[in-house]
Amino acid sequence: MFKIKFLRNILLISLAIVILTPMSSVLFVFPSITSVMITKVEDDAVHVARHLMSALMVEGKELRKESVPFGLLDMQAENFRLMKMKVFLPSGEVVYSTERKEIGNINREKYFHEIVAKGKTHVVIVSKGMKSLEGQTVMLDVAETYVPIMKKDKFAGAFEIYYDITATKKAIDKMVFASTAMLFSVAVILFAAVVITLSRAAKTIAQREKTDKVLEEEKGRAQKYLDVAGVMIAAIDAGQKVTLINKKGCEILGYSDENEIKGKNWVDNFIPERIRDEVKTVFAKLIAGDDCLLEYYENPVLTKDGNERIIAWHNAVLRDEIGKITGTLSSGEDITERKQGETALCESEDKFRKLSQEFNALLNAIPDTLLLLSRDMKVIWVNDGAAIGLGKSVSELTGQSCYHLWHNRNAPCNDCPAKKSFCTGEMENTIISSPDGRLWDLRAVPIKDAEGKVISVIEVARDITEHRKLEDQLRQSQKMEAVGTLTGGIAHDFNNILTAIIGYGNILKMKLEKESPLVNYTDQILASADRAAHLTHSLLAFSRKQVI
Image 1 (cartoon, rainbow, N blue to C red):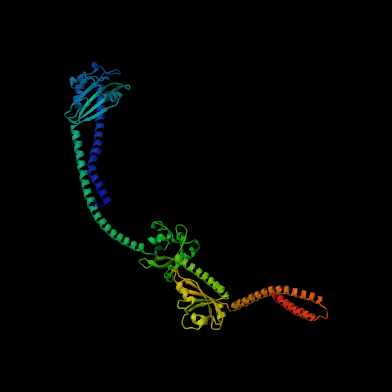
Image 2: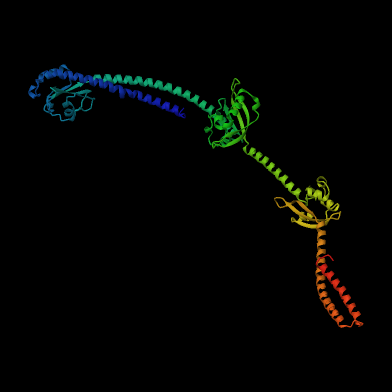
């Protein structure tokens, strides 16, 4: 019971009431009765004072010693059973006292001059053994009363009256004690009832707390199960309000505390506006019992910062004890990245397909023979140029060994550039001759993986048969051009010699007699020189590539 704070507080309050209830008699009842008694004493004193005033011969003048009738006042004091009585002059001097020894004393106390002299009655209860206002120890319970004597609103003197209130005070004390005892008894009984009630309540609360603790532990355990789940779990009631959400759900939606989500309308706060009507329709069908939507459903949700996440839902309905659907329990997987990946993959596939088509078109437009070889020297792919150059279809070339394709062999060639490229990882080239007699410039280019390992080789083969023929013709032409150049030089030099021979031969003929036998020799020399000149002209025409 003391472990439960509010029960402990109730018990303490009850105990305080038990303690304070008897004290209330002392603090409230006794002062109230005493106040009534003082009022009664004050009224009696005023009544007595008024009666005694008639015995004093004041008649509008100040009270004087000679005007005090001692005998009459003694008799009145006895008649009214007063313990003690005094008469004061305005100065505070005692002019009469039932105790004659006090006559002549002067009261200089503040209460006399500041209260009584102002026309106010002053009453003090003095208990037995205590001192009065005059400083005298009383042996009985006394009401010490001062009544001013006023004449035309002017202070003319005062009475001091002592009442014996011992009997009255005893009666009051007895009454207060009885009241206190009764209140204490009632308070104790009520306190006992409170203790019994609180004890029972403590047991009930302890049992309830134990039950609540078990429930809380189960709830915490269940919440942990929900929080460690890698998917969003949310419960939504029939009014579309969120009643439960796990940690993963908070993370997906961008919230740090589930209380920021619970209680909010799911559709209005966490579904994009463009599909809210659609989602409301689907949710209404779920609440109505449409089982076709329970298995799988996808829709985007809004996060705290306004972004969208795509969630794949699996739904189950919640029912009350009579089987009525009260809401849904859903598990949702965030498939945003997967969807983005699928979209990106499709786009990449389309892009790759287009690039592949463009690349294949580009490779097929190349007239050279292109072969892609595997490590076992098999043809993986060929371009259209290879099919044209080798005189076979693409399907016929694919799968063949390169050494069988080029050389009709059953084993790789020792100087095969593709084989070398697989080993060295570098580009290799050579000139080969195919069985049909054509020459090929063959280059092998390695293709490597991320680790630098050669995984395949591209063979680029170019038919250089015609090129070689043209090279031979060029070389022959260059030789002939050199011969022509040499012939032209010789012809020029020879022509210079012939010019001298022909010139001097004609001069010699002109110098000879017509009948001279040397004329015939001279003509033979000139005829031979002429033929030599014609030959020189032909050589010059050859060197200049003119028609001879």
